[in-house]
Image (cartoon, rainbow, N blue to C red):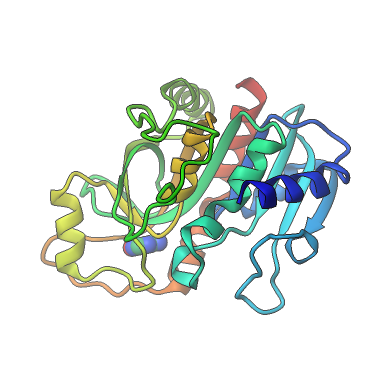
Length: 269
Ligand code: HPA
């Protein structure tokens, strides 16, 4: 595993013209951030040795290098989800490669379903903590010596970066929520009883990504910031359908705002 990570990092390093310490995983809701990255060079995932092969036809995903908010950044356009059939090692492989490339801070975004009754569609939530409900764990197996066998998770999401994000939000007049992200495998959206259970467990939103990447990033010693766009809402006693199209539509409407926050956060962090 470690050999593969190093091999991939060597390949990428040979094609990098910058030395980024900030990386961004552009999940749903952050696609528009790509437009803000200047002096870009791109690598197709399909050309990168050992990178997982995309399950979506004609959509391989790209690794990007460039400048954002005056800083060198590395960005992943397209992530690997557990529900697609990848192992946890594959889902989190790019994060370990980032560690080899010198990344110190990771920004992640996603779309999620709101179970906090105070939330509204299109709200942006700074992730302050998570519940890991995936059926497999990315650190299961022999410990890779990037971090401890039993890593501390008392501050999976950096308080420093979250506080900075709130100050950015205040300065820009953007009302940011905060809360706990429940990570589940999907690909089904939740039944009403499941949404209710996640609320009772202490969650504010539920989604199908992010948690494995964040666990591995923390094991690698990175500081992590996570932000989520709320694309559908559960409410007690109300049955409403959720579709991928609707999730995409709501996420798209909030893209610019989310991009603004992350860009400014990269600049000042
Ligand atoms: N559940 C799980 N994942 C999601 C949801 C949801 O309601 N919305 C967007 N991603």
